[in-house]
Length: 612
Ligand code: F6R
Image (cartoon, rainbow, N blue to C red; front, side, top):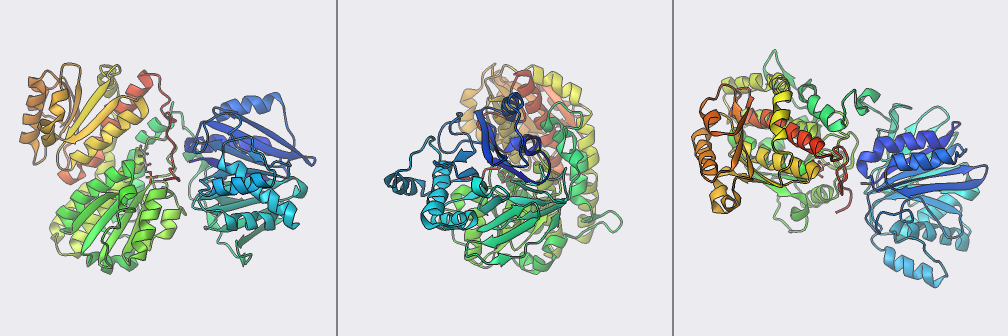
């Protein structure tokens, strides 16, 4: 949720850190701050607001120093203000800390520190941690690294940390548990960051720290150890995306860029997995566990938000093609319900970031109960990717816009490939039908491209709804999860209240809301529900609702009834979610821009929800 950046090397630290924070701002954006040690003196600048506000602050009072840490915050403890912004300095000024996560037992620790005379300026758990480290450092005469480890052995909760000690100003410390932290390995310089995006422009060598690991960085090298003080030999991985992927590439917003990337990102998700010559699918990431997946008694998909909607599409796919029992669960409910899980179950965690706290906790619980746990993640090396038995990366490239778009289509693409493959392996799909489906899947990037060509018309339609206060989204079958996703997209970036429903549910309550002010987005492509959805449209029109229908190209029936139609190419029913979601993404984007909303950083949201 928050973003951490750290630097130690030979260059001026603050420009590197501020640029890194701009890259990470999608993770949290209610306040930002930076601390640099310059000639043995600690300089801290922090403020409520965006990284741009921090930049103004730093520019007006230039700072030197070649070691520093920075933070962009999404408030958990204490409102967003200058005092609660990170970094936090310990009471006697020895330590400075930036933190992502929550220290759950901070109240007890704070009370004990208060008894020793510690006072606190902020309402944050992070300042408590800074003081705990300092207290142990002074009382026990420890080195900075020893004091950090001693403190971390006492805390309960989650942390990604960047820490400096003014007395040991040639060292930069990082630690993680539950919240991600990576180390960039350069030539005579090292970086700390919550993810690879701020590191990519400096080096492609990266170490993803594991839980309860501490890294000590100097200008000469890195030293990774655990809380028990054992030295560890970490794996150096390579960052697998180009810096261009994390720029806006000429688009006004990341979200628009990411919507437009979908023909390529979906093709990337299939690359090396769907073979156009043999019309077969092979999924290397789950090859070893495939026999167990094939025999699964039940598949349980766990996820949150947009990823949950992708999971719902997965349910339709697996049931139709693999004839296997599927449940889709909100990770936050599943983890606490003490669900009945047996070793014959397969859990699939779906997550763009791979760091979502509830999803991570759900898979850990399922693993303990003996289930096979698979992951579908976008961020390489993320916690969920590492904590699962096997998995498939979506390879959609970095998604920076807070509203998920290309990650959704990539997740659905993976679930589609899995369902087709599993269907064939379980004998539920004939070879002929399997090959037909593979061929259709290969055509999806092109179909998405054709929807995007209709952007100007979609913008015209959006204009009519920029002042709406509410909206309803309806779909059936494969298009029901797409209705949910359309509603989520609209509400999160334009702040219009929107609800998605299975179209048949409308008459069980929501129909009461329909009047001439209510836009109703109806997913009405040619599929087995077509006649039924036509009836649903008539029910809306009879109550003077405004209907915006997403229809199959050439549909003449619905255009006579609907206020607006947006056409999508004809495609296999099972692949409709991948194509039909795109106009809904564009409508949300257009409406949000017309309403003057901050599309890439909607209020109150953060990209990666690392707290429950
Ligand atoms: C919505 C959105 C969120 C995420 C959710 C899960 O646009 O982005 O609803 O889908 O927070 O995040 P991941 O997929 O990272 O687990």
